[in-house]
Length: 477
Image 1 (cartoon, one colour):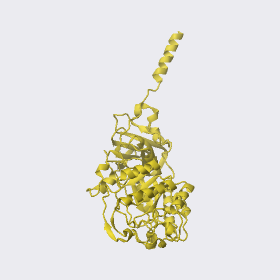
Image 2 (tube, one colour):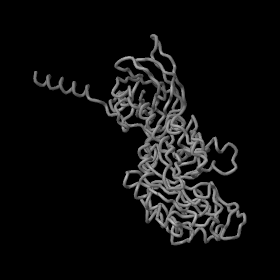
Image 3 (tube, helix red, strand yellow):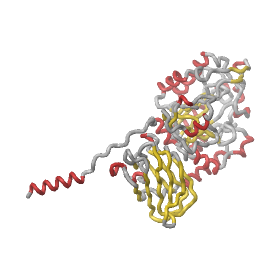
Image 4 (tube, rainbow, N blue to C red):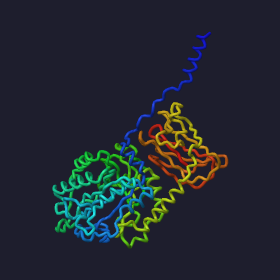
């Protein structure tokens, strides 16, 4: 009798045991750890500040005298505290723009802050203020230099690399290095006052330059039109593509290619490399401070709309906030940033889906590790997943009572690649499901504004996916 009881007990244990369910395979390409950290930042600030601030130009010619650079009240703590209060996680400083004037006392040129009335090391001050306030520090070092007599020759490349060594050795850690495609044209060039052309594809020998930087800062993110860390979004209006793949094939990104700006905005579903889009835009019409633009600072609502078309479409926002001639972020800009932060805080204050009941049409191997409840648990490292051969499915979230719903926020588990191609959102109203939104990609984060609707449950339907969908969060506001 005892043997029979033991046998029954053993059978019961075995039959009730959870079968082992293998995790989903990655869908290539996938982000690096540094890229994942960059995605999590979501909002970074750009700071344009040089002789242009004092000459009222956007692009300096390179003949500006260092004596024109004279901020009278410069306070980088004021910059960084205002930016932190607005929600920024990092700051990228224009250490040298196209005019060639350096905001640090470079040993390789006299065209720098060391020969200005100010004389202070602004790169050092910004770096230290970032450390003090807990923000990451990044640098912009223009490859084009309208001041240097040797621009266009091999000697200039040595100069450029020497300055990178100065910056990375003295002011790090640096989370992002930013360089754009403005290369060659008319300039002062040490008094030559001429137009110079270079071959942007070969002149800088970017592979060697970037490898040099990686040796100093292994996890640095490189921004340029085509990456390799993050790519330009294709415009300076603050708008990522409604369809926004983090993958793209670098070989397709070359100057003059028809439709290149659209491709940069949307990425490529079958791209070979993970090179997500960064959305750069200025809080003012220009990138540098101009007094005539004091009344043209973007409003909190305009900044909110930009947030929706950048962060809300799976990209990271890089918002330029330029200091004025005093060396301070202007009061109008500070006020706009504060109003914007208040709007974001109020809009996304209460997640109606937090810990709410969630069910799905199916989940991977019926294992708790992949159940629908993972989308409402507040843990970014858990996710709902289906079986490998299931590329569609629905998650239903039920609230404790009827709520007015205005926004939906969805996130994919992008560590294993970007998958979702199309999805819809429905709300339960008048005893029936009503479609309130449809969209394409999700990626790191997708925010949808919907016509306000009162409901006690919503449903997200994944209608097409490259592989089994992995959804880490669904939030409702």
